[in-house]
Length: 301
Image 1 (cartoon, rainbow, N blue to C red):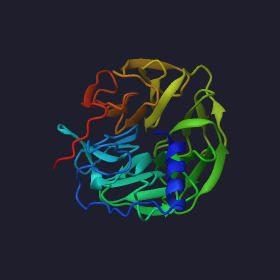
Image 2: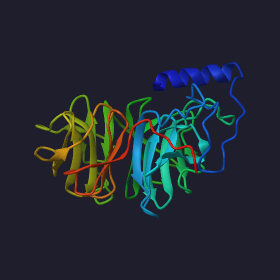
Image 3: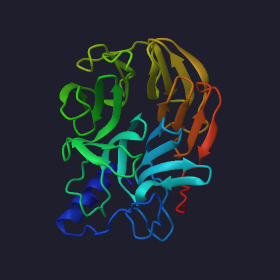
Image 4: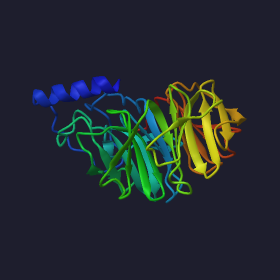
């Protein structure tokens, strides 16, 4: 389901008073009968994945997609709190602390807008609170770089920057970006993948310059100062320092169209491929283990 369709469906539901009055469960899991995105009693799965993360509290892997936030377990992906929120821009910023954006489920009785703005959870996605920009922004990428939080707003293609954890924002450059990368060690540096190639900012996202010689990239991460990890459009996992020269580390097992890349550390990587399978590497991308097969969701406890 595309984002455009979800927004149109949400608007139609609001206009007709058709938002179903179904409350979210306070438990982590529940059968997915009658929920948004489900066409039968069978659970519809994760939907397309937008974000991945590792909770430093306990090392648990999380995935966020069109149909909720999921805890990844050996038995499958477990939907958190039975919530079908379309979760974009998902990032882990501390123990049990997540930031995200996106769109509410069309069955959410409390929803008043198709744009969530910036939301935060401090209990590993069981509950969320609105921080700012509700009804205004849809951040497809969020990057906490020390004192600065960067967001890529899909509504305007503009970089937003906040020095107060997202309570207030400055609007900075407008670029055709798909993914952002930044690090606390060099908070003024921002990297962005775009249809025009890799872009680089040294002034906190106020201006960007193209990086000459960079390959076409599907996603990029900045796991440490002076270190870049990227997924090339041909599936190679690359590492580099300044974006102009790259070393092949390995290859993602699945396709990279719409792929997601997250670096919990320079060596600990997570990636979702074009089939929404999730792969984990603990050697900087040289080898990968599949930790979730796309489409499989466990609705049991």
